[in-house]
Image 1 (cartoon, rainbow, N blue to C red):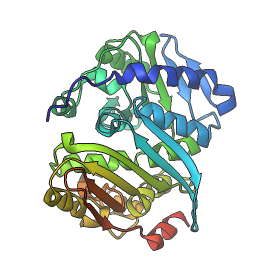
Image 2: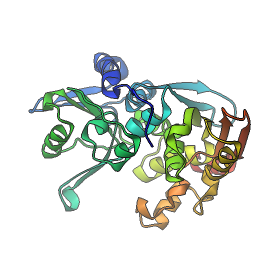
Image 3: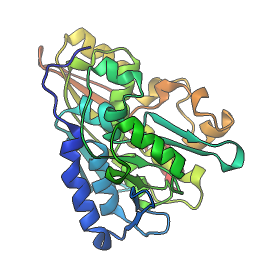
Image 4: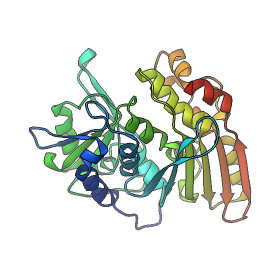
Amino acid sequence: MQPKPPWPSINRLTLPLLENLKRDVDALRLKVITLRNATTIIDAGIDARGGLEAGRRIAEICMGGLGHVALNMGAGKWPLALSVHAANPVLACLGSQYAGWSLDHGEGQAAFRALGSGPGRALAQKEKLFAQLGYRDSATSTCLVLEVDQAPPLELIEKVSRDCHVAAEQLTFILTPTRSLAGLVQIVARVLEVALHKVHVLGFPLDQIIDGAGSAPLPPPAKDFVTSMGRSNDAILFGGRVRLFVDCSDTDARQLAQQLPSSASRDYGKLFAQVFKNVDYDFYKIDPLLFAPAEVIVSTLQGGKTFRAGSVNEALLDSSFS
């Protein structure tokens, strides 16, 4: 799939958002740490309190400056929800927000394992996805968002600096633990990204995705990692709703809508924490088709028709959040 050029630089679009985040660290209850190699660490929930607004802004940084994330109150038992829209959903979600860069260092109990999100991925080009997108960015500074509760080791930071071709002092890591409020927000804000990733897994042409938006309820925090991770995934699997606008035939749009919801997976029906436990906490053993929103609405630009599939599962959502 080759996109219609030109695509913008997500690193340049993200830079003012990152500068504003650093400027407002006190108001957002964040903590900025400068390492001895001058790399910047932004703590959004480890030793710093962080919060919902911090998570909202970090989610927009994750989307490469192309996304808009809002908190809003709706109806129902869990009314606080996130809504997401992207000016260029494929680039924003898959080219930046998707946690696709595996960052590992060390062995055994001292090992550091994380998946990198954000515009730095487009500089490093470590994923086959970028060749499929036909996208490569260039910039002199960048950032990555990690869902971790500790800072990455200096050796890994130096490797990321080399891979991104930026100086260490021009590199920023934003850390958002899953149990933190900021972490929950930036995870649930991936509702549209989760849908587009499944679109890609299904083999649907990404250049036929013209626009999209999504929403999902914000779960309550939990004391432990597995419960918090489970609730944030359940928010999307059982409460996420996505609307896509596609440039394809009605037949292809109908088929996409039918295949896209989480209920199309063999693993659907159990809380995510239980599914995770059943596969011995190995993500790669989970059916990849499970990672999708609960309800999907696909509208075609060619035929003007709309197709719907899936539905919000209030019972499972309530069981997870309660």
